[in-house]
Image 1 (cartoon, rainbow, N blue to C red):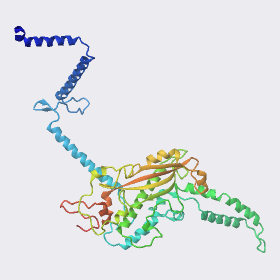
Image 2: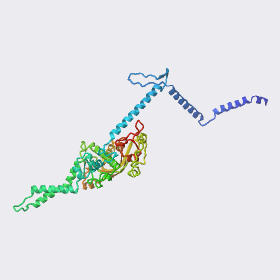
Image 3: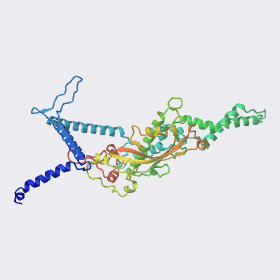
Image 4: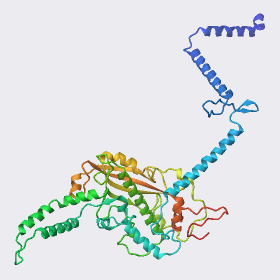
Length: 460
């Protein structure tokens, strides 16, 4: 017993060693294999990390026969060194400079001019300018069939579209009268006493010539323009304060501003439609010449609600028209990057460097070329399709009976939500104080720490 006590530790170690030896032959369900695999993986990770830490760094080879040059610091390979860090900072400056230049070019490319000079921002009363704006606005928005036949204004939306309207009943009656006069002048025979001798023959000729008159006028109209608009002028939205039927009273700078935005939005849309149609190809491979060749057949409606996304005229009534906004920097680029999908599918909203207008469009489009239209209409422009709401087939025979010739291909009625983006930097030049207050923007702060006055605004 005494021997056991003196050698207890040796005995315990021996038992442990014996147990370990036995365990090596005991089945442990792959434990050793798993342990080995994990150890190997850790060894590989260590080797990879060590390789990255000790790897030689070399400058890029910029010539075909050049050799790589190692980056050294005090004779030892290192990356990045101070020179590389400073060079990276310099490149960041170049990126910012290029970004600023790109933004300036975007602002310049998107800028529009009001229909009348000196009518905006309207910091002082100018009844003559507002009266002239009303006249020019109504002339630009009048797309009735009668006005399309006589206007030569390059500002007119119908002229921008190269639009035509289907023949009306008045057109048919007027042409019928012309045909009747031509036939009577050339065929009518009278006796010595003035009695008409061949009235039945004249009537038959008039009937023959007028039988296809409506069809002839339809084709003439289709071949005359690139797209149809409604003959009553209802294709576009006229600002209610400036409708021809509205009283010709002074409405103030805010109303003028929203009417001008209304025109800018629809003008850009019309230019986009004409661009789509004029770059399309006819069936014979030549450029589209008229409605029969064009993919967009008919502008059924363009509906623009006054205001920017998230901002309406209802909010405007709560803004203090006499208080200019506090001085501040209105161009927060980060705000323009935030998205709000509750406003539109694109997530864009007014704020930062942009103002956004959402509006609804319905048009007749040739179904085969609908993908082309959807892809092309916003190309190189500050407008885009936010949502295609609905696509329904069109019965061309019904449209034909109403004076519209869409051609031989099937067409669909497309309902879409469109989105127009304005760069705020140039919009501020024409923005009345009440609108600036509504949007919570202000002139930028100058180098001296005071608000730089906008054109027509007194310094604060």
